[in-house]
Length: 136
Image 1 (cartoon, rainbow, N blue to C red):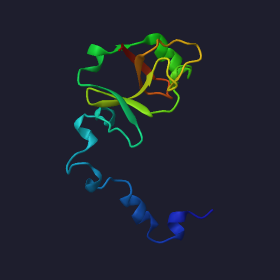
Image 2 (cartoon, rainbow, N blue to C red):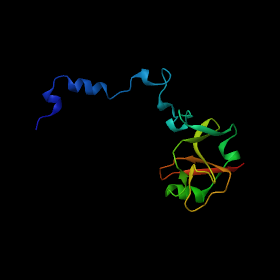
Image 3 (tube, one colour):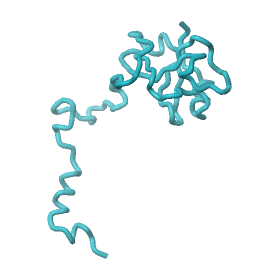
Image 4 (spheres, rainbow, N blue to C red):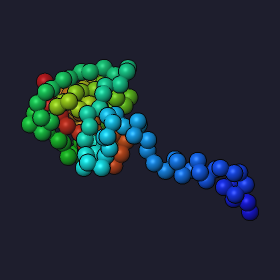
């Protein structure tokens, strides 16, 4: 068996350079995740092709309620957006997937939604899906 590093001169030196992140890759010089912040705590931008259906400057848990039953159904993929991030809600500067009860944007075979209620999704497609709602 021939090791790639021994067969091609200079490969080990290049591989060593790939083990560190160049400072120019950070958003701001000197910024890194070592400061205690997390990539998940940063606000997300609304991506191109998404339609914002609700904007709310208030705190998420002050005006929106997490629904445990709908969150469990989302974990089982029985309550979710038909098209991930097609409709979005921006709450407290963060972007969430959104769907409206009784609308074609929502996959709800068990009919768990209420009509005209906006649902926000965080972590759809994972086992940590959370569904928040607020009535219009």
